[in-house]
Image 1 (cartoon, rainbow, N blue to C red):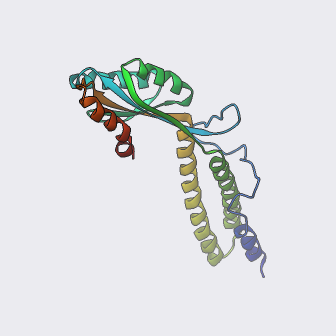
Image 2 (cartoon, rainbow, N blue to C red; image 1 turned 90 degrees about the horizontal axis):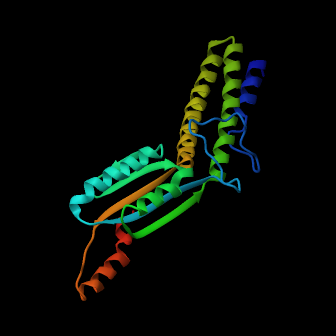
Image 3 (tube, rainbow, N blue to C red; image 1 turned 90 degrees about the vertical axis):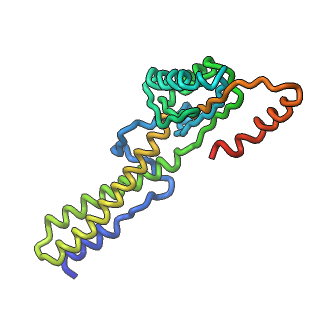
Length: 215
């Protein structure tokens, strides 16, 4: 077995997945910092609210107010329709955003939740670090190779590793973004004044509508 073949086998045998109990390497970077809570957990926070306004004609102004709120808190609008808006704000300002929405009218339904993504974030970081090391070793082998066959074999593996590395880096950026920016969904509804019998149907409507609105 030649020295070049030995080096190639060593490089290709480098672990591609995180080892149990490993911590995220310090050199792994993402475009959006993922800030942990007081317990060191990384939480992806989301909120959903039903906002009641006086009249359907006021929906446009309410949506404009929500968009202005998102911008004021250094966030952005994800989507907007005639009676619904999804926007994101820095996670640290989520409570402020919810309080502001509550001040725009009556909140008939609300839900706030969080998903702990600490383990997933750490695993991605370690896998990325291992792939970066393998990528570096393969590049060294390309520089050291003296025959065309070896160069082609190493470059093929290098291309595969680079593709996988870019895929994982994209996943990490997306996950970090979910932690850094909380997502708020606000659905608008017109205020109704049902008669005595109508209150029964109105109550049933509010009891079951969330089974169909929030996918």
